[in-house]
Image (cartoon, rainbow, N blue to C red):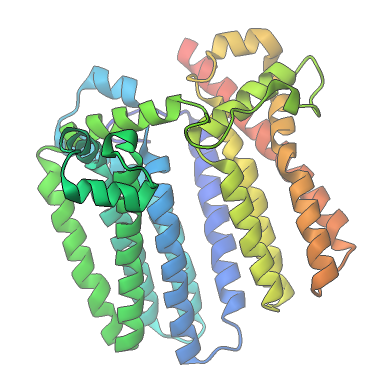
Length: 408
């Protein structure tokens, strides 16, 4: 429950979020521990730093999608909390994710008793996460400055380098956003390289110093965080309102493309998938995740590591359907009247099925090129369908509880 907005989540929603966090932490910890089997102290240190680089990339890309636009923006406008409480609200949203991502480093160090290594990896995750929070909070202000001072030579060069556009006004949002993403990833990569160079024990100095830097960045914004928060939230809300167009090279999802859904549920499935495409680039993330799964298979890792990678991908793509339960897509009363609980559970299941053919194709290719067994394709397909059904049902139940609680 948020301390800024007490009662903002129903009890089933809190149970679901807590259970998902625990499951993700256990899965990541087991995957990291299995990967570290047989490695000596030096190998475990290298693995922790490689994980730090991967997590830095995930935080650099995922932090703005996690925080903006804030689903509680309307209620926050009504309560009008002061800047410090808005900052606390954002930290509360990102802290559980950082806690989960800290588990792999601790799991790798557990087997060898290298506590300094585990603390170094966990501190690096928190450092990058808090630094990303501070830098992305002021993104809206930088976008405004980019639009106002677009004629400067520096901005013209950076805009051309990041977007290929000759005019800074052509894409005043993308250029600062990409530069911030690169900056956050660079901070995490430097921490990993510095830790590898200094070695166990001394390597903890880099994350400690950078954590202080991240704290300074946040404290500098504490008194004026409300201005940064509302400006950035508005900028991201405007960015997510538009669907794919010719400007970004993508077309919006066509209604006829949802051919696998029956006519009665096709409008709901199409609207849900279109909303997901507006909210986050799920197609690119799904392809990127399967590329990592393929890399794991080609690396010849133990079966447990490969299974963990596939399970994480399945959980991630099926968990994204939770975004379709927000009232911004369709008011809960209208949604309940159109299809009811069972209808929306079925519609969300059909949304999740969208990625099953892609998984089957990748597994078939891996069965041909690697040691992945062909019979595992059927097993993973059944696991995918079961996960799709459970996630769809859970999201719909939580949405229905929240709707009834709002009317109580």
